[in-house]
Length: 200
Image (cartoon, rainbow, N blue to C red; front, side, top):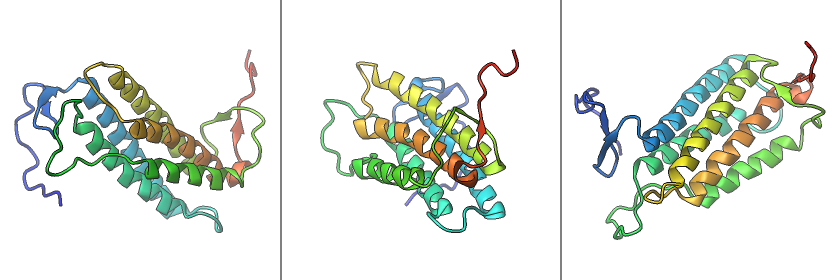
């Protein structure tokens, strides 16, 4: 169980931060950018949760609040994964670090398929909007894509390891958030579609 008694430590006052391994790195390190952007995605999903609670969602069908809460917990798992660097020569630790698993990726895929099966076919690209929940989901989607870009950049460093499951998870997440945004827009009926060249 995590226990946080003191909020400020002063250890980061000179521009470094500690990883779960105990190593200290610059706060602009790409690993920090990766899990910081995962955290940013999670914060936006907090707005999604508030909006779902306030405005409700489709009466029948998957519980989007339950899905969103699971994603938020997964994103803490992903943050912990990224905050604990894996090294090729690491010995088996006494307490294995928390890592994203293939089962978590598979659950996202199942949820994508379930929600997408109820949507109107797309005729064009979708503009962010329709209603507030959809707009927040689009915001979370774009930020999760930024997290993915940071994670891919980190994985391309020959001295760093990012697991295949972690990369798959963040990739599927943006797909799920897109499908969720359409689902809350009357299952796609209220989508705002892009009209190419409309304002030329």
